[in-house]
Image (cartoon, protein in one colour):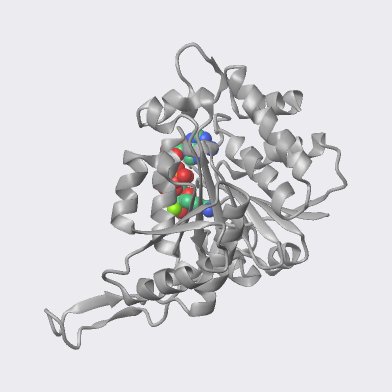
Length: 355
Ligand code: NAI
Ligand code: MG
């Protein structure tokens, strides 16, 4: 099994090193190969996603990705910015299904920004469509307004669009995920205002008929944003478009205590996947050895589960993470009184020891 390891920028190399340590400790037959990506690749070769890195990713069963980006690249033209690397990988590999589980570990119930009783036992799965919607829709651009409230003024525009097959394939992913969980799907849309999301709702309803064992309900995105903080445990699998999913999954991350705990998987229809923590490169804490590596370690577990068919190994990692939390070990982002503060490497070492 071939894994491309792309550490990237900021805390990326620090947290990926810990996940690699954990994978090594499992003694599976894995071939890991590293390559530069993001700002690190731009510094070395003038491109955030060099052809050799893309080729390595394409030839691998899975990609373990750290994070990319730094404020110092904000003045570069858009095509050269580190973030283009992750967009380029999603596009080149057709990674359309983004799994973002939000699990509140029992030990971190008090780290959440919500009352403990609202989040204790929380385990929801947000499935975000990743290659369509307003983030990629054409046309887009700037122009002189031909009409509207201020004709002749400078204006900018983007296009929200989804095709039926795009909605169908993410729908099947969501219903099949729900079959393995509590058999409930909430499809989040804005069908009351947007034609794109009326089609979304119609197609989700049709796909849902093929899964009579799964209960489907629909919710408008504004209500979903509210329900996530009012009564998050009412959700199980949430499926939604690219932009709503981006926002709701970040909102859900805060229910669990820290974004440093949240893994993610981005999959295509060949089970090839890119696995990365939900957070970014955290330039404010890079190089200090304090970043929480658990989101990346849990992403490695998702990689074993979804792309490499190693469910038992995935569960071992998840149990080891639970164990280090139960031991009271905490990086600063999840620290609370009475627990033991540790750094990035100590946390990784503890997971290996627990394994
Ligand atoms: P961020 O997620 O990097 O950081 C937000 C806050 O969370 C910071 O205070 C950071 O210190 C903290 N944080 C993040 N991960 C942590 C961890 N593992 N342990 C402890 N604390 C952690 O988001 P921000 O600051 O908006 O963006 C920083 C850079 O990352 C930008 O250049 C952005 O474009 C990029 N980014 C990259 C992503 C990716 O590679 N997929 C995703 C999101 C942002
Ligand atoms: Mg986001």
